[in-house]
Every structure is written in C-alpha cells, then in structure tokens.
Image (cartoon, rainbow, N blue to C red; front, side, top):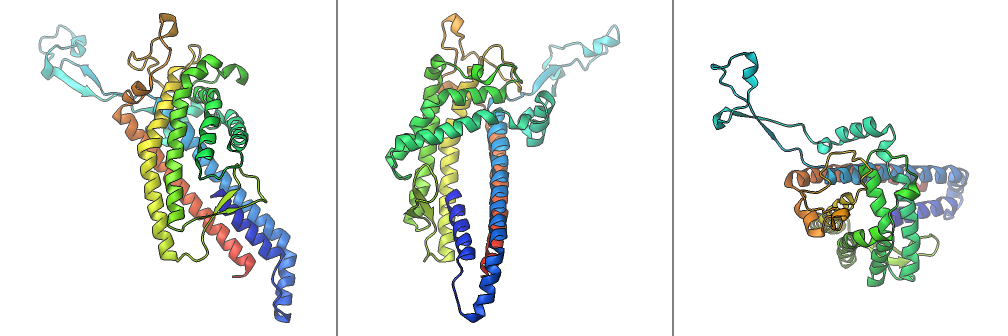
Length: 378
C-alpha cells in the first residue's frame, strides 16, 4: 500500500511539474499547472501524511494496545451467589441473606463485564488508570523496535526480493534478535505506569531464551500469511513487481497495478486475495500472536502491577523460578488457557479495527484520487 501510494504521488508530481506540451491551446493550461505545482505537491503530501497518521492511530491504539489487553485479560465468569429466598424460619431480618445449601435456593447473579468488552470502556479504563495519553503506551519502544527491525531486515536480506525465502528468513531473524524489545513492549502495555526507566524494563539474555520460541512462531506465522496472498496477486495479475531506486525501502521491489487489467477482473482478484488474507490471518497469525502475548504476560515481573485483571499463574500452569519452574507458560498451554469468551472479544476487536481501517483507507484513497484527478486535469 505504501509503495502504491508513493507511485501515485510521484506520477502526480511528474504530471504537474512536467506537463506535456500540446500546442498553443495547452500553453495557458501548462502555465497554470506550473504555477500551482508547488501547492499541488504540498496538498498531495499533506493528504498522504494525514491518511498514514489516521491509519497508524487506528492500528496502534486499537489493533495493538487494546487487542493486547483483550488477549491478556481474564474473562469475567458468571458468579453464582447462593441466597436463601425462604426466610420463613428466620430469627431476624439479616437471615434473608443467609447462604442456603439447597440447589433450588440458588440464583444467578451476573458478574461485571470485562474491561475490554468494548473499545470505549478499554480506553476510558486506561485513561483513568494511566492518564490521558495512556492509549499511546509503549509507542516509544515500538518506534525503536520498528527502526531497528527495518535496519536488520535490510542488512540480513542482502537486497533480496520481498517475495523470496531469503527476505522471509530475514524478517523472522530480525524479530528473533529483537525478542526482548517485544517482550518489554507487552509488559509496558499490560502493566500499570512505572517509574522505572525504559532501559531497565528491557529484560536480559535469560528472558530472551524464554520468549524467543513464541516470537519465532509469531514471525513465521506472519510470513505465512503474507506470501500466499502476494503470490496469488501476481498470478491473478493484480500486482507486477518492478525495480525501484528512488525511494528507501527494506527491499527495492515495488508492487504496482498492471496497466492492462480490466476493472471487473481486478475487483474479483482483489476479493479473492482479501478472502485468502483474512482466512490465513484468523487461522494462523491470530493464534500465534495470542500465544506470544500470553507467554510474555506470564513473564511479567512481580513488581509490575497488571492494568487489567489476569491470573499470573494462568490456572497454575506457570511455576515460579524460585520453586524450580521456568517462570513462564508453555506455548501449548498459552493457547489452551485462552478461553472462548476471550477469543470472541478479541475477534470483535479485530473486526472493528478492520472495518475502521477499511473505511479510512477508502476515504483517503477517494480524497487523494480526487485531488490527483483535479491536478492532472483528467
């Protein structure tokens, strides 16, 4: 998407700054385009930046922070409070609330809803517990991870194409190297505000050994969800890889739409790619990400207080290191302890994020396309 946006901006800028001479009738139009070229470029850049910021806002706050809290939070089960409804033999008024051993005297009292049951309640909870800017918690560490990850991928891929096994291995290896940063990010997101500096919140090598298998699983799942839809797009002639040398990207491969693709065929192909991407994400990437987050949550330091309720022992699956255990939950147990109500809440969050992202992307694309059409004059 970013490569395609860059291509459209570059083509629009070229059309504005280097219009084709069409004779005397077009001279005045070319003069107007030359005069407004600077403003046109500024307008396109502002539109692109605002669209990227809006998409990042949705993805980070709701797709990452809220989703992580949803994965960690324990489901609030229904609480059965036995109450004696037969007070005929009561000696005083307090006997009305006496606990009864009879099954027919039990009534069901629903417990409170989970904090992450709604996006709004989650954001309000974060604001009450951690301040106004708590929705951006962990952002600094994420940007550090993103910058380091980009550099490592570029170094380890040796300029290999993005749709190759070498580039995929470079992606996985980069995430493995930065595993402790991901672990620290999860701890910052799921815990109360801390006065500890950032460098002290990043665990040491011993923690890397514990979290690395979960990070490797997540990174591998991410590549498995990216490569098949991309290859399908090339087979269906939705994308065509080309070499690009005027922008700085982890790989020099840029995927552009073909010039001879009919509109109906393009939409059908895009729909097929979308279905495949969603299916792979739900079946592979989401479970792998859930496992990684829950393993990281089980390693939360004792002096960090969770910002949402969850059982640190994960139902007794975690044995502290002081008692001779590993101090973390296993990969399989991390998924088994992820209950169905939590899964439903997570899928609702991801569905809302997908809907918001699609709506904003379509709106930004429409605005950008309209501006480009007006500037180019087509």
